[in-house]
Amino acid sequence: MASVLFSPLSIKKIILKNRIVISPMCQYSAIDGFANDWHLVHLGSRATGGSALIIQEATAVSPEGRISPEDLGLWKDEQIEKLQTINKFIISQNAVPGIQIAHAGRKASVSAPWDGNKKLDVAQGGWQTVAPSAVPYHENEPFLPEALDKIGIQKVISDFKATTKRAVTAGYQVLEIHGAHGYLLHQFMSPLTNLRTDEYGGSFENRIRLTLEIVDAVQIEWPADLPLFIRISATDWAEGGWNLEESVKLSAILKSKGVDVVDVSSGGLVSHQKIVIGPGYQVPFAERIKKEAGVLTGAVGLITKAAQAEAILADGRADLILLARESLRDPNLALHFASELNSDIHWPKQYERAKI
Image 1 (cartoon, rainbow, N blue to C red):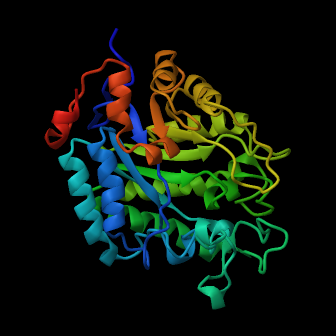
Image 2: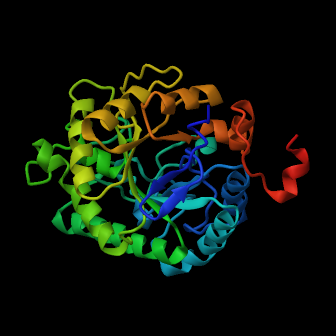
């Protein structure tokens, strides 16, 4: 029986050669938002490794939207050139280049993980963070995020739109909006972090308003024949927070607004979350959203084996498999998974002598 994992998937005018997607993974290796040869090798090696779609790490729509000072950005035209080079290489390997555009909100202005993931003040190279409400991620943080006013919200929307225009110029073929992991859009969605009393707070409809406005804004610039993804956290794993029922409802709305794929993760909003982790622990979220919202979904989270990924797709629980840490351990995982599933896929001609 032919492998589902190595079957193609058409989304609008893009044909993915298989269902393996390299998930966006921050590299904390940029200077002033600019990509460099580390990003070329990191992303390019996963394209040569056989994966169909390579999604670039969370790329900030503004300097204050970065998680760390070392994050990639696409808030100015000068940042486009190196990204064009990377994308041309990915395409040359019969893979699709994607980008995740993001704003970290209150979780911004921290040091890289290997420097302690510490909140940085201005003297340390950090900046004033923003959020829906002035609620910090950790109680002992040195300063509070600033609650966005209406002008600030409009700037965020404009920044997502402008970054999308640059993404088109840079040659990306998939755009993903980051609405997960406790970053700005997720902060607006959850009642744990959104304490507003205006039209952006309170009810479900108000809390998702910014996300929907950003979806509308990016579609002005993003070609209608190219796929649009969004990553969401299906649950906050915390009492009183954003939940799976709301995620299903949001996903149905997003589909009606032209979003093609919901990339389903979870958590990341609050430090007191209680996540129950195990192999494929987030797959049930993708399955329920797929079945109840009727939208294509991507499954993520401790998916590490070829047979495991194949079963998720064969059982109709998701449409794509997104791999993060496992692809850090093995850039060629698609080639290896194909061998395990007895699927004969194309290898780069430079590597063919190692195929057997």
